Image (cartoon, rainbow, N blue to C red; front, side, top):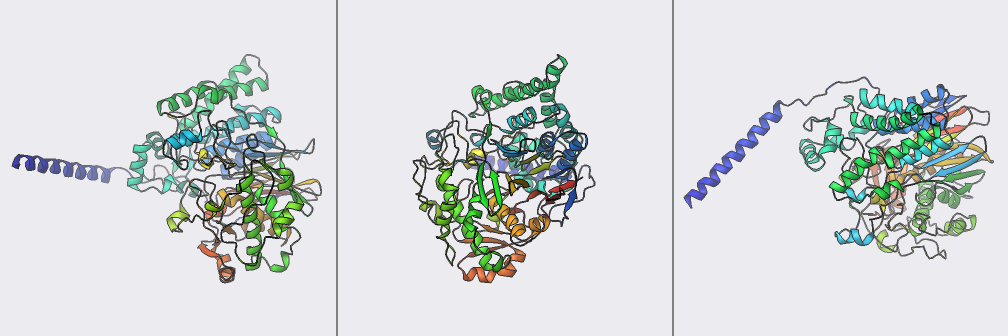
Length: 629
């Protein structure tokens, strides 16, 4: 017994010595910035309206906006500029839109006058099924597991834009992103939301669970925090972009056409050298991706979903997104005298909130990937249906969401009561979590010929990245449900109903505006509020984007575990002070947030005036930047 106690004593001494030694080593490790770079922060900073006569770009970071403008100044068009901007966003805002992300797109082709949607969300692998996920004991899809990775969409999106509408080579449009990834850029405030906020034990845990992710984000030094304005580099991602560009150059050097070169870029990703690395990693980690999954992946052009409000027509992506929420909410509001209520008065906030919640109830009941779900668009987006829904509006908060409208369809899901009654505890940790609503960025571009591209890229590094590539495959499977009766139910080859979507607006049958935003379930809410700020209350687009916002969290979250807070409104501080007491009297539970809170989206918008002047606005809440020429 004494010998056993003696052994335990020496083990304790050794362990304590190791802890002390580790602490001493950590104490002397470098923890300060490596190489601070000059940068003027744009997050939670007032911004001014910009105007131009030729072209404009507004994107999620200033580097992406500058890249887009450089392409436009050199003679490229909006499609070329959009791809350049997307790739730079993948570098400079990879915590919100990493490569190869989802990328919902809307375009306006000025030559034909046609608006088109491109399918910018990937599919579930063929091996993904509810039964297989349930067999792991999952009730919802984990946000940090390799099984939550969706087949990547953005390489397909980029090549489709460039092949069908662009003028430049992939090598040309990728050059800015490659240069920035290699030379580095200053860490901005958005990069500190998420991995940048990790303490030492969180960084150590991240290093253990996701060793390559840690290497990428902490540049091989997990013990060193990410510092504001320090130089951030992503050399592996630059190598991947160059690998794809070399495939194009090989074809062109052999006399191939531009289109053949672009196809070679796509093939390199989905069938060639990049695909091989992705597949090897999934095989090693017991992932779901197969060679057939990647090789057979495709997006495709589709007819937009449309809605209208007075003289305005809204075009958005199909049911693989939540794009219909905003247009349906506006149709419900049409004919109501909102102006007489006063901007952001309690009655106004209540009225708009109820329209949004009615639309969200229909989203959850009827909307899903149209390849798998018979979405009743002819009824759902009709004026008659909006009028029926309008009749359900009350003078008090709904609390739990109202039932969806009764539409005859085998795909509808009107059994939402249990979901609506689920309440997520309202702690500050919950509301400030980087996984809630802060996983997306945006871009909108108009060129000198009047072509427009608006896109809402998204994905972030909460699942294991592919070693040596800089590739983060995100976790968008997390937006599926594991309920077979839900229109957003997981199925092999199906697309989840993702939150990101893009909007193009016409006025009197002419292009008027393109806009989009990050923000999860806040996205349509922010876009509705910006539009009403302009059209009901006469604000210019920058004033409309900067104005205080409200945020209903009554609907089940689009992200697993899909919890809800019935009857609850989040308000930015200035709006809370204005109308908080009156909203509580209407039955709402309120959460007071800071002014220009990051959870409330970051709208980027381009408006074409009747005289041809271009107006561009960037949201003060994030690092969003607008330039017009």
